[in-house]
Amino acid sequence: MKPIQHSLQKWIQNNESFQERHNAMKREITSHPLVRSFLQAHEEITDEQIDRNLNKLYEYITQSHQCDRCTSVETCKNMLQGYSPILEYKNEEIHISYEKCRNRLAEEAQTEQSDLIKSVHIPKEILEARIDKVHVDQERTNAIKSMTQFLNAAEEKLPERGIYFSGPFGVGKTYLLGVIANRLKQFNISSMLIYMPEFVREMNASIKDNTVQQKVDAFKKADVLMLDDIGAETLSAWFRDEVLGAILQYRMMEKLPVFFTSNYTMDQLEEILATTTRGDVEKVKAGRIMERIKQVSIEVPVNGKNRRR
Ligand code: ADP
Ligand code: MG
Image 1 (cartoon, rainbow, N blue to C red):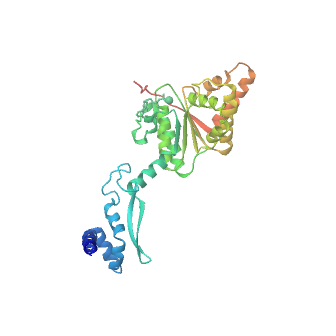
Image 2 (cartoon, helix red, strand yellow; image 1 turned 90 degrees about the vertical axis):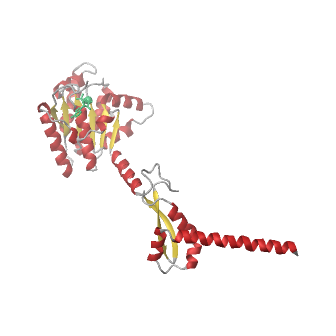
Image 3 (spheres, rainbow, N blue to C red; image 1 turned 30 degrees about the horizontal axis):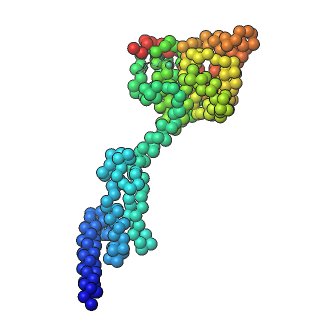
């Protein structure tokens, strides 16, 4: 008899302490300001419902709410990083769900925007170039004026022709491309910025893995294409006619702007384009490419001091 009585007593004791603990927790949870105001807003919630959902109410108060304890998504302490809990009373039931927090939304918007600039081999300082940081000096006023005109027009409708910045080394031609790409990003216009020598290398490498067509297509269709340092690379006839020629032909027909930077004027570039191999045929082909370049861009000289050390 004794052992049974003993265990029964123990059970009651344990159960009592369970009850006590439950009640203490319940008091603590329901007196939390967030839960208190939730319960005040939903007076129809019964005591039995509170008992049954104590775990949800507990979860709710232990999670960070709209970043009140975080500085970034990375350091978020919540079960679902970047999500903060919401408590609701729906269909006579208490529900806890999660929504994206402020930090996460801000981070997502940022990535979405940086996705608007695709670049290959362009230094970070260029990708961060901002219009308010451009030094206006006399030798560059024309370039800056053309850039501003393009950007003002782009806010309404993307112009058909970009700019061909020609001028000596170090005057800030590539920098201007960065400024333009960043400004266009704010109008949700995407730019593809590529350093020409790298473009040539990349396309030559793509022959092996059969991705030439796919890459050519991406360059054809980007909202704005920017070819940095044209003339600095040695072009094969294949690249000139089948890659560059095809891209420019498409963009000319579709009225999509292209930007260039070059150490050469358009006239000088025409000669360079003809010198892959010698002969009259090449001159005709170079002339054809130049015609397309002139259709998709307007030449603007940039001068001034060499800004590199
Ligand atoms: P380019 O393409 O004409 O050779 P870059 O655009 O590379 O010249 O510019 C040369 C250097 O000067 C880079 O380090 C660039 O960041 C800097 N630079 C150019 N323009 C500006 C500017 N307006 N404000 C500040 N830095 C500039
Ligand atoms: Mg440059």
